Length: 418
Image (cartoon, rainbow, N blue to C red; front, side, top):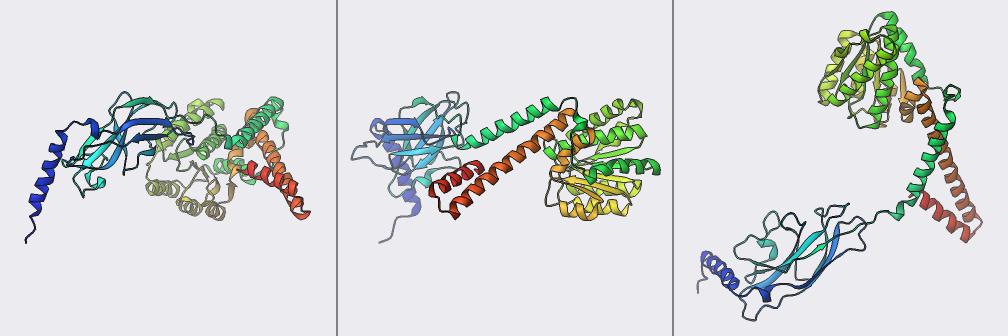
């Protein structure tokens, strides 16, 4: 006996769905839908939804293959969040639930029916909606608005809050006490910063320009901000000695900020007419296109000094080697630990890590910057002391088998370092 052709089977299945839709949809609907905030969710992006299964008549031509949960803010129609099997409930976690201020949503559960042997996954389109003509999606009554709520405060981060308060209090207290005597505050000598004035003097004596590269990251990067502060000090020195400084930029926003910094530096030096905005210009945002352009500037201009301050990537060694071939004195500073070995090898002086951040206070001796630097150092000493005490207590407890002390010390160190 020959089996019926596939086209005939498809036609029969397609005709079954309209016939089922002709019946009253009420017995086919999920009943008693309940949606509540998930108490275990601290972000406010999940709901716990439950319902009772529908009770279709015994002669129904389609069988229940699964459910769909739909959620919608009151200003737009619902979107399918999840498609699941025949379980009568689910925990819905979705990026559609916007955290804070946690808007309310209308929730609908749709029962999906299809001919026997058709899986729920076969009925969904790319967006998760049921669009297959063989299927019949019967939505429940809409409930809501239901609001997923998150926690305003993460108690597991209490230590971070306490540390932030302590550090801020130390910095503010230091700013208050240091005002008016910033010159008296001792800052450890940094060879790379001591050489800045020598580099400016060398460029002045040779009558050659200086080139300043402020990294390849954007204006929001902390290393770029530190580099721009150093550029301000260097520009004041260059204005005083009427030494040309060339600043090729990889980012147009950085260029605009650095032009304003250099212009202000020349004004403070009393030589606003000597400021040349065309010396600070945008090259390209292409990494190696920018490096090739800067290398060409170095080989053509033969600068007396090159400064590399900010965040760098694979181009660090290319820049430093080209500056070395041009015969320039080179001073670099970065917090990119992967590029520090190249700068240390190819440059005369290198500022490592936090030395880059301390440079602006070190060079300018502005009371606010010096106070911030001192406050951060005091906070680091306090944190280090707390860690030493905690580790010492845990070690003592382990050696002398003091269970109570060991537990307290281990809990403290774990809480502090979390």
